[in-house]
Length: 101
Image (cartoon, rainbow, N blue to C red; front, side, top):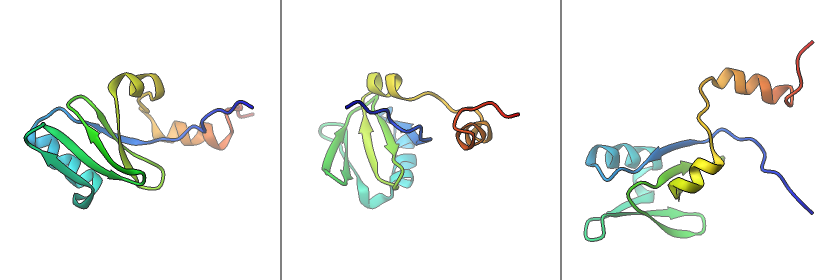
């Protein structure tokens, strides 16, 4: 059997190693889910599957249930595209991609 991912709008922030981004990510993920390892310059993110490590350049994604997890930049680029108009996306999804009459 083959399956296709359902189209979902996600929120994501790219970790660039800067302290300003760390503060933004801390708020984005909820401080209890994110730790910074200064020795390795990595982020440790508590996920539903256990701790995941994010390195500089990784995207931190907030999933459909509010869970957060890292995604490598190349995978992110292949999987996601910027949604410039949320209302247009909602209209598209409501019509399941069909043109309106």
